Amino acid sequence: MEKALWYLLTATRGGENRVRIIRALSDQPMNANRLADELDVGYKTIRHHLDMLESHGVVEGGDNKYGRLYFLTDQFEHNRDTFEQITEHMD
Image 1: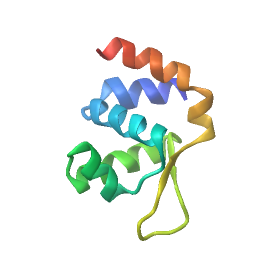
Image 2: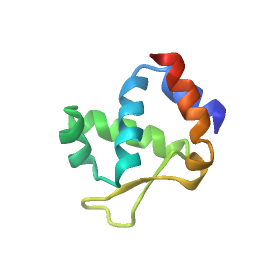
Image 3: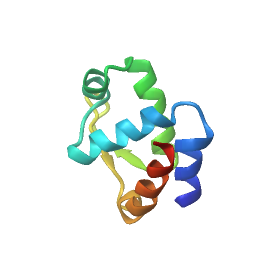
Image 4: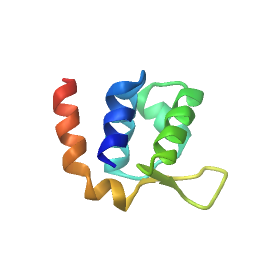
């Protein structure tokens, strides 16, 4: 997970938005539409970042395809300290 977080947050464009998505989901689960509204980012951009985060085990979506809620995974929560360390280097 540590390598995935470094890649997702620092090695690719969009790392800043991914950090913002993770922070928003830390407060509560949300669907893509709500994340787009909360973060003032386009829906398609949010979907792209959610797909990237999901494929690397950072977030997981609920079973409902329509209005699907996204949650941070247990695997991410076990590595939250790594996330915080990485984001310190980004600021």
